[in-house]
Length: 482
Picture (cartoon, one colour):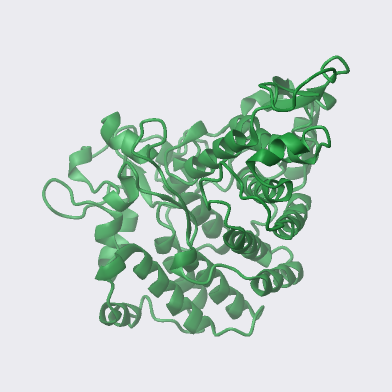
């Protein structure tokens, strides 16, 4: 049978399942040799929560939010000046991906399927694991470009995985999400699913919404496929209201609390405040979401931290930290929202991919975002006044700009997605740090590979650099053809 073991795989610390004839003798599939799939699922989903928050594992989560100037650093003015060049993806392979692969393997292998089924029907467990595995791979490839995919997670079958082209990865992700959604069988609920409580209908909507967003990524590099995949996702059913929003809910528990809370309160560091770029723009628009996104400073005003200004011209108490809806101990992290889906539909309509009305969809996206964040404080009167402003009102001439700017606002605290959309569309228009520390002059467009890859998977690293381009922060990923 298969024993759960950790190995070093081509620079990726991964855990895998390995078979020996000796282990196949007299092994109980319910024994400790087999981590129960409920725990594996929960562990993977907890990582999905932290990668969607602004301070998380590996240090790379806050970086995109700094690049798109939703946040600014307060004391150590380095990350907003792009000092860190190499970021590690090892923990994502070693943690959630290997967990999800183990869920799939245990529910597929004839020798272990029956034991795994006590935690939910085999098909339902595999479906959720495949949806999340594809999502995490998209998370990785959007940051680094070409990455190990088809040869990853193979354990001692392959210690040096090749890097797959991002285009090939994307093609396979569409397949994975579609096939996974079709696998739900109405059987026993999946234990350990802390995101959607094994609600198959919601998982199917989420998978289709992932496909929708991924399809729009192709708008500059393969619009024909993008259009086809976008409409297929729409037909299968995406998020249709704020009630469908998918979040990771942090707990009042030191081991599973909001990472910003840990930074602000538990560790009393307050390293990051809302950026002056972001605060000043919302002030200009009189945006009613500002008091939700940000807290007032000690003087009772909303003041963003100057972006990438060194030395820091003030202290944390001078600036607006992230609001309680973002930074409280149990404040959730958004994985996918209805507003995000509507902005995608508005852009697709503008591109001519669908027959939808771009203006109506755009305004509906703003309304959905306001209702999401304001709750009972939302009013149609305030919304109507807001969208009538020249900098917000939709016209065919300014469609790309207003959609991009408003999506940036709606994606606050989803800095990675905001960075992805900024790279693809160019909106909002941002000025780079005045004095970058990475040798460049512009806002980074990718993360450089972890340094472990250069020494532990040298041959494949050299091949991917030759194919994709220099391993720095300015070689664009495949879909970034702005």
